[in-house]
Amino acid sequence: MDAIEKDLLLQIADLHGVPEGAYNIRQNGESAGRNSTANIDIVPKTDGKSGIDIIIKPGTKNESVHIPVVISKAGYEECVYNDFYIGDGAEVVIVAGCGIHQCGGVEMTSRHDGVHTFYVGKNAKVKYVEKHYGGGDGLGKNVMNPETVVHLQEGASMQMETTQIKGIDSTNRITKATMAAGSEFIVKEKLYTHGEQVADTDFIVEMNGEGCRADIMSRSVAADRSRQRFVSTMNGNAPCYGHTECDAIIMDKAVVSAAPCLSANDVDAELIHEAAIGKIAGEQLVKLMTLGLTEKEAEEQIIKGFLH
Image 1 (tube, rainbow, N blue to C red):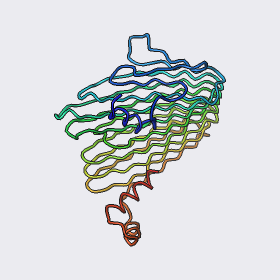
Image 2 (image 1 turned 60 degrees about the vertical axis):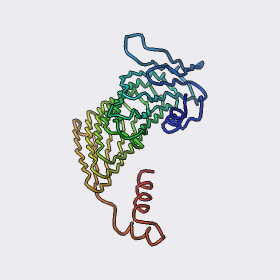
Image 3 (image 1 turned 45 degrees about the vertical axis):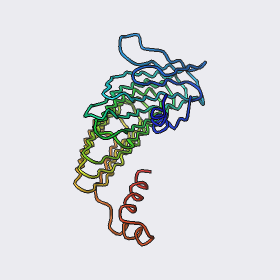
Image 4 (image 1 turned 120 degrees about the vertical axis):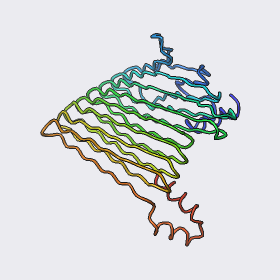
């Protein structure tokens, strides 16, 4: 990897080199490195699709999987399918993400569409971290469309942290989950857009099992003339608890919309939605400016704290 590709890897996966444990590093559509372990097997797909299967043995503990994607070739576009099979009782951390550096000197588009499907076994626990980052000369477009599909069996738990750092001109972020009895699904999304960027986020959660719990939280900042759309659909089909929250800061000429859709299809389904969209409070700016910061520096500190 060259310096640009190493920086992308650092931005999206906090990696300075080859990670420990199981990993698959994808670089411009090719494998730049792959390693399986005794408990985690990573194999290329055999159904004609581009991507990999990650098989984690039942009972696996204290292991991790890194599957970052870097694109440095101007105008490169791909669609990748990765399937995760997490065995009963396993506890793992999965780190994904995609970094694009568009530096073709012309108005070209680089694009990564990634479909990740998780089959989480009974009483298994998964922490899933996904970061998206774009860089380059600003002439071309960086496009990312991540789709995450989660199937939680009885007692399974998945915590999902997604972050769009900067530099993504267009993104359509889709997350779907089906939940069995006693399962738990927690999502924390952080999103920042600026310039003319566009970001769409859709959550669809089917709460099918008794005692399952879901908590979807999105924090975002929209600056300049960027546009964001947040839609959350939560269907309580059994005695369950569901909470969805959208908290956004709007700046300049940006546009933000939030549309909750809650459907209680069982008398014991408890569903809650919260949404707040507003500008940075003037007193916050004044307080920081009295400490010697410029207005722009004060705004940056407030945004950093909000998205932390």
